[in-house]
Amino acid sequence: MATQRLTIASIAGDAGVHVAALFQSWRNKYPTPDTVDRLCERLRANGSMLPVVYFAEWVDRWLMGDLAPGPAAVAGRRYQVACLTPQQAIKWAGQCGAQFAEQCWLATRLQEAAAAWEAVPGRTVMVLREVLGPTTTDAEVRESLGGVPVWLSAE
Image 1: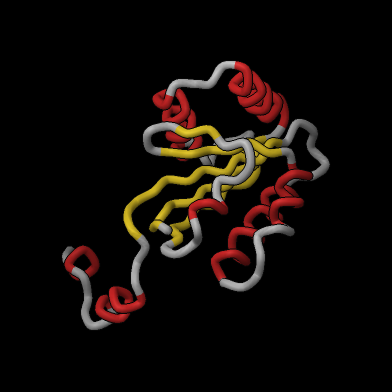
Image 2: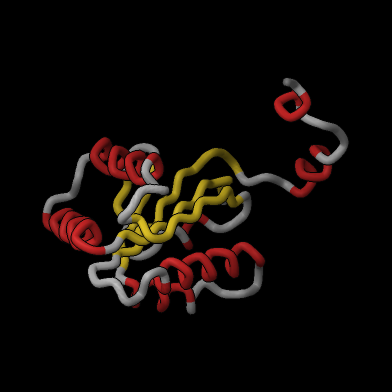
């Protein structure tokens, strides 16, 4: 398990078709890790730009790493990323489980991404995972509650 940043985005239209074709080409010739990382960094930097029609990002401290980024993922040095059709995202959401809140959060984000602008053709759902560090323990969370961190109290 790890502390990880998860990013889910839906890209629509010609750009969504382009991303799906890119991933299809990567099935025949695996991309370099730097190529994967550059794509992920560009998506995160431009998540508020059209034709990105859905973008969600959060830090998850406990979700098992094997749940994300999902089926048929490719790996960079920093990121892992999967490219899904909206139907694949919905199917995966149904398989996330509901034992822990983190599983429900992932399933909900997948459903939201799949539903975003559903009447628009060429939608592709991308799921990124970036490992930030080890899993946070309950003791570490409790310990952090006893004060205000410098980054929050400094002006």
